[in-house]
Length: 135
Image 1 (cartoon, rainbow, N blue to C red):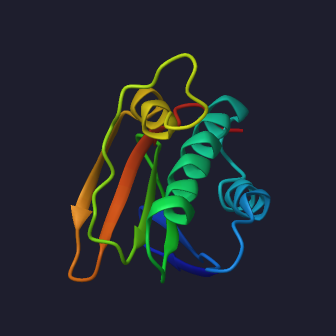
Image 2 (image 1 turned 135 degrees about the vertical axis):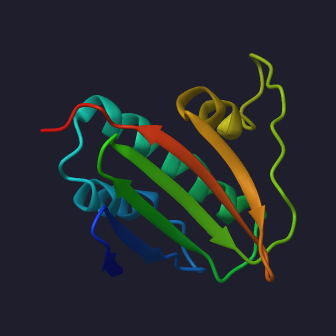
């Protein structure tokens, strides 16, 4: 984990392990990195992080990393998951009997905005979660 700070925000970076999808560890790391966020917003952040990181393990290529940045006023958490695959995720309709495929539907519902940025090697899938209430 690498932390960088600027005057208006705090950034956290977690390199994702290519061998094992330890989503519990990713969620604990996210909670620790964003300890000042109200529980209601933290739940939304954790759901979005889980879905975006799961997509890396299911569909992407390594190396991969999770970036979190919490801005000051107004409080916004930016979640970005970077990986080496050039293929952008697609928002797909899900049916009530489908077991998988709801990840981006959840991200779309919970995030104020989300999108994909193509990079020289791969892409970054990002989402913004407002966090107006803090501890």
